[in-house]
View 1 (cartoon, rainbow, N blue to C red):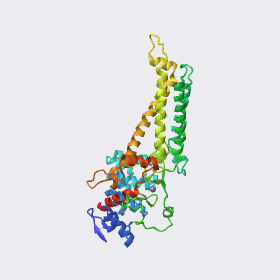
View 2 (view 1 turned 120 degrees about the vertical axis):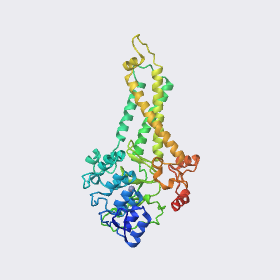
View 3 (view 1 turned 180 degrees about the vertical axis):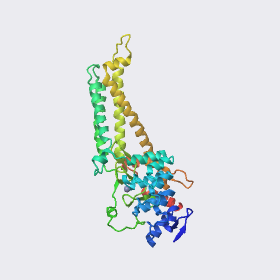
View 4 (view 1 turned 30 degrees about the vertical axis):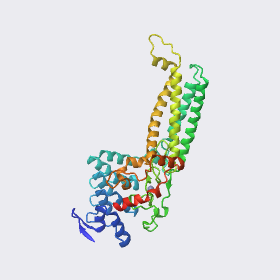
Length: 422
Ligand SMILES: [Zn+2]
């Protein structure tokens, strides 16, 4: 099975299938006829090189799943990542980077260029900066290389909340230069402080809770184990090649995604939140939403009480003194609290609103941001269509009762139709 491609290279059926993104055919000839998926054309390019050059991400997932060599360099010294960087294909580069190592990003072609330099040279600035960031060795990579869970910003958020509570107590409630607090304001204040401590407990809970990690196929990850077939009769398989995870070596359920930070596939992946140092997924989305609601309510109560204390404070200004100068001189802690609290309230409100809208529409942050990537989110006319949306009331009820949307069975026929049509 050899042919001559339009680039003049002598190549085999595996190369042509990779060039045209015929992933199902490629899988068929590899599994049924033991076609060599590492075969090289006369320029030293493997099917993985061609799939990367042509931007066929699903074909790349299949080849990487089968342990295709992603560091092989062709006669020009180019790896598949070099070719993907030249073409500026973001999805292909992402798949290759996640499945590879930092060292692979530093490989140079025969001209002495790395993939980052090639992407930059071809004007793909955004891709170049993302690849450049992927090459950086972080503090945690250097000092905690074996650590499976990243520290992230959760400790910073924890300290920020503790500082806010301290400022609230010292500069708003018990500040000696403020007038005596009334019983009603005192009651609201203790409510706000209780909510703030409950938010900290919730932060710990949401950052430690399993977001819905899918067990990696450890047997398949062992290089000494023989190549295993992809079980297309698996209950998770709906016919989407994007369901193959080249890193975990599993067929992952639809709506799940591999998180490169957590190094796991996560069920109903929403997003990786650095502020909780964890992914948000099927198993902790309810906790995350409750944490956001508690944070928003606490910040709102704190701002309202702070504003009330400042507003009702009797001010005696001298002729040359402005209000802000008086406040800075007499209540600097209260002003600092108000600034930090309003900053937190703004961020928390935006996040809570966005999450609430997505819950009502039963769509994840990942799906909303990358809708064009997923075939199951496209209707017959090619436009966005969410098969999981069962109406605002049902979506919200499912989420509030179960903590996640239990939608696999309800949408299975729709997913099958999508696959058959494509
Ligand atoms: Zn994975």
